[in-house]
Image (cartoon, rainbow, N blue to C red; front, side, top):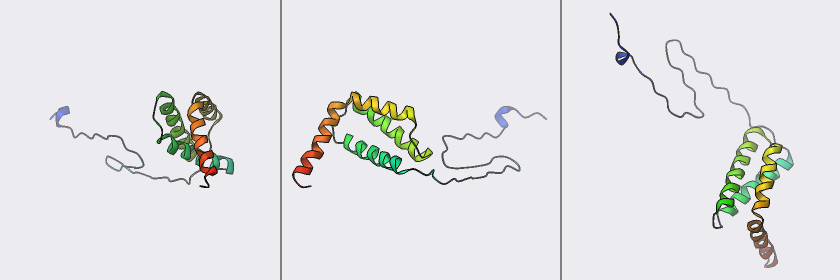
Length: 120
């Protein structure tokens, strides 16, 4: 007796993150959890600054430059959290985007200066 493909059971798995599973007879799933990578003080400060700048960017009108900067900041945050550091090329890319966004950064820096002058 022959079974057609239509009669065979089907399994479809979509996008799965942070999970494990096993399918089939005698299948076995294993989970290996690893501690977050250690970060030095300079990297911790960079991560804090990246997060602060991303929050500040939400307060300004978005344009091509701010969207690109925010995306790179998000990628930097993910890289630091997952690897414990931001690589040389990531830092170079951030520098380039920050230079391109100099007018925006001047506005944000001046807001900090004004806050300091009024005693906040």
